Image 1 (cartoon, one colour):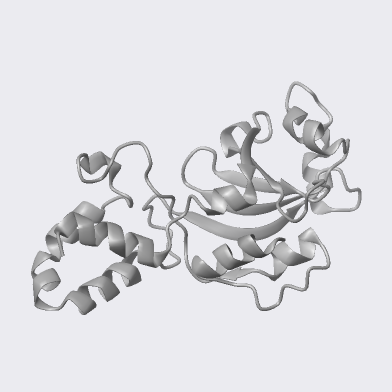
Image 2: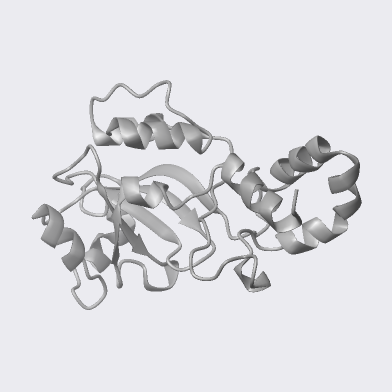
Length: 209
């Protein structure tokens, strides 16, 4: 993966110490995250619409901790980050990093046994977006993110012609690979996420300090 991607992963709290640049699969599987990721709200400024809050429930958090904001600003922002940038199943609109192989075309794998029959049926699986990019009729995938939103699964294809900055594909468990969306490049997608510092800057603007 290219250096811009690696730098952004570090900014977002990822560990890239074990990346060697040997292959896309090895690079992705070498990444470690002990935190979650949040996408930056784009449509409506948070300053003018509470429903555009950058993290689900953060307005309530600010209200519950308004005294702490004024009494001890450092403690407040530490509490904010500890509340939201942690691995938890509680839904705040976060995405989770993962690096799970998905091999529905590779004989001898558990994925093949479970999914190959479905993936052989055009009315169940639509891989046109993937085929258009890779020209690979039997691609292997690696899941990079999952979320509670739609789509809730994000994959890259291991035969992507640009492993330095692969294309991200989205699908959802309700229509698993029956609908596949091209989510753009991994580099661009990573740039939609907020670092901890970027969230703090948004909150500072919101509370006026």
